[in-house]
Amino acid sequence: MKKKFIYRVLSLVVIIITGATVSCKKYLTESPVASVGTAAAFSNVASATEAVLGVYAKLSGDQGYGIRLSMYYTVDQDEMIGPANNAAPDGDRRDIARYEATSTNAQLELPWENLYTGIERANICIKYIPLMAAYTSGSATDQAALKRLYGEVLTLRAQFYFELIRNWGDVPTPYVPSADQPTLYIPRTNRDATYDHILGDLLTAESLVPWRTTVASDERITLGAVKGLRARIALFRGGYSLRNSTGTMSRNADYLTYYKMANSECADLLARRDQHTLNTSFQNLFQNNIDAHKIDPSGEVIFEVAMGGGSGVADSKLGYYDGPKVNSLGNASITATPTYFYAFDPNDLRRDVTIAPYYVNLDGTKVLQPMVGKAGGAGLISGKFRRDWITNPSIAPTNLVQYFGINWPILRFADVLLMFAETDNEINNGPSAAAISAFNEVRLRGFGGNAILANTAATPTTHDAFFTVIVDERSFELGGEGTRKYDLIRWNLLNSKIASTRANLTLMLNKQAPYNNLPQSMYYLNSSQTLVYSNSLYAPTPAATPSGYTKVAWVSSLTAAYITNVAQLFTANHSELLPIPQVTLQSDPVLTQNPGY
Image (tube, rainbow, N blue to C red; front, side, top):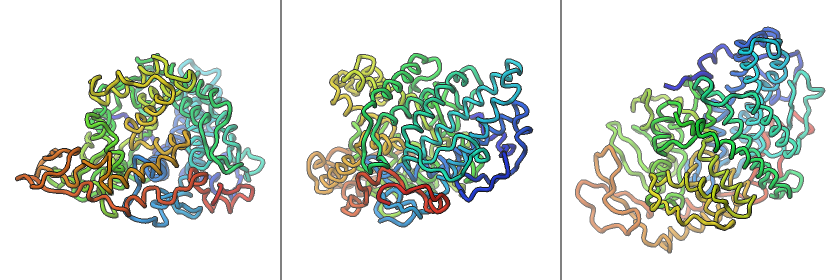
C-alpha cells in the first residue's frame, strides 16, 4: 500500500494568517480551517512540516488535479476529447473542451483561486522557514529537514505558477505573503519574467531536496521531481505561447538557451538510473502501480499528486470521470479520437492501455462500445485510470463512491527521455546517438521490447524527421495524461493538428484512404471477462455474425456531428488561453482580460 504521507496528517494542516489584511481580491484571500500564529506554526520541524503539507493539499481535490486541472482543461486536441463527444457546448465544462469558455464559466473561478491559495500558502512557508532558528543552527537532522521543506515549497510554487501560465498566460505573481504586499491590486507579470523566477527557484531547490532513495518512499517531492519540472518549464519558456501583448503565437529568439537548460536537467536524470528509470512494463506501471495504489519501485513516476480521503477536498475522480463504466457507474467522459486509435501501430501495446473501448457488467464481463458513442459517454474511452483495474483495495462494482484515491502523475521518466531527445535534436540540428537511444528506449518498451516490431532501426536521423516522430511518440506514450494540448501549444501545432484530425476523420467517415479498409462493425465474444474480437480491426467486416459473438457499430458509428464537435470552436491566436474569471477581473481593476475574450 502506498504510504499516503501527505494525507496521513492532513487533518492537522496549519493554515496561517500572517496579519489582519483584508482583501477584496478573492484569489489572494485565504479562508482558514484553523489558524495559529506564525511563531507557533514555524516553531519546530513537525509544525513546519504540517504547514508545507497544507501547500501540497492544493494540488489535489476537485479544484486541483483531482478533476479540473487534469481532465477539464486538457481536452480537446488530436488524441483525447472531452465530455459528451457527440454533443454541443453546454455553458460548463463542455464549453472548455470545445473552446467556447467565457469568463463567467463556473469551472474557471475555483481552480484559479485554488492555485493562488497554494501560492499564498507557499509564500508564507518560503518566508518563515528560513527564519527558523533550527534552519541555520539546529541539529544536522533538523537543518536537513527544514531545507528540504524549503526546497519543496519553492517547487510547489513553481508548479502552481506553471499551471497558471500555461492556462492563462501572463498572470499576477506575488512572491511574498498577502500581508506583506503594499497593494493587493496586482497587474499581470510578463510570463518570461515569471518563468525565469521559478526556474531560479528550482535551481535553488536542487541543492536542498534529496534524491528519492535517500528518504522515505512516499509522494513528497524529491530531487528528480525538481530537475524534471525545471526541464519541463524550461521547454515551455523556450516554446511558443499566445502573447498577451500581441495577441499572436510566438516564441523568443533565445529559445535555444532554455532548450539547453532542459537538456542539461534531463541529462542529469538520465545519469541517475539508480533513482529513476522506466518500469519494465507499460501496462504494469498503470494497472499494478498507479491504479493499485502502490509506489512505482522503478521511480518512473517522478512527481505525482497524492490523493485520498474520499471527497472533493483532497481526492480524485480518476477512474470515475475518465475510465470505462462498471455496472453503469462512472462517466466515461474522456474519449480518444478514432484517428488517434488508428495512429497506433497494431503491435504497440500502449494502445490498449491508453484506450479502453468497453464497459464492464456487474459480473465482470466486458461489453464492447461503438467506436464513437452517443451524447453522454461511450466510445474509445480513456483507459490508463480505470475502475476495473483498481486494487489495494478494489472498488466493488455496486459501490456508488466517486473518489478512488488514484494519484495523478505529473511527470514520468519516459517524459524525461523524450524531452532529452527533443532538446538534443534542436540544439544539434539533428539527433545525436544519445537522443536516438533515449527515443528508442521509450518506443521499445511500448512494443514489449521487440526492436523489430518497434522498428527502432528506422528511427530518423535528420532534424525535421526526428521532430515529427517525437511529436507522435509523446502522444503514444503520454496519451490521456494531460500533456498533449500543452505540447501542441508550445510547438504551435494545436491549430494544425485539430484541422488535420477533422480532415482525417472525414476521410474515415467517407471510407477513403488510408481508412478505406477499416471495419464498419466489430464482433466481440459474449460473456467474456476479456475483450475478444472475432474480426480484425484493420480489415472490412465479415458479412455474418459468428456464433457466440455480438455485433457492434465501429467506423459506421462515426458521424459528421462528431467531427464538427471536435474542438468545435477553436480559434488560432485566441483559444490557446482560457479567459480570466470575471469575478477576478471585477475585484482587481488593474488586471486585464486575455486576447479576444
